[in-house]
Image 1 (spheres, helix red, strand yellow):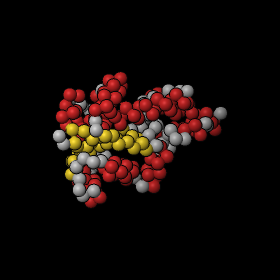
Image 2 (spheres, helix red, strand yellow):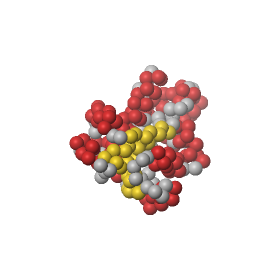
Image 3 (cartoon, helix red, strand yellow):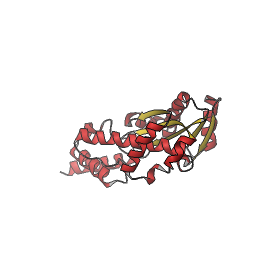
Image 4 (tube, rainbow, N blue to C red):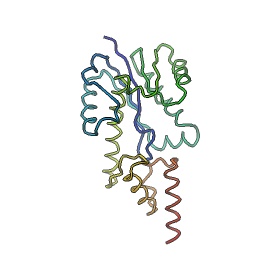
Length: 215
């Protein structure tokens, strides 16, 4: 039974926490029973339980955790696409499977596919947008990646003693957490947690500085 691989990420857009990229290797047959779909369509508890079942089922898992410091460096000096490419490539080089399905992180699918093929010519690549909705092997990678990222966010919240929310700019709990810390001027506790290169942080930081000056 042929083993194939799928790669996807969780946490590209959040202002808090890491981005987690996961590659999984498994047979298509072993994943059929799960009837997998887009990781975003699952409730947290359901997704977590599913991720644990998948971890026990797949042949191999490859994990890369990219924390805010490295994300900030690439955003400010290169591009986040370059960072993702390097992380994906490091997984691809570890994968035993000959066929690899990739949820593309760039608008230019052909360019990314060509780069992968140039660096690892012996592999066959299927690179598509929203591949996690079409290919169960990519869905499995996305579900596990989301599960790991959520667990990391839980630990960070526990360490700080305050719930930070999902970490996405659209989450009011995340924004309220950022506002309270920035307004208190206690920026040091955000190191390793916040992506300072994000416009959300820069905007809130300017407002916080104005608030302090007005006191």
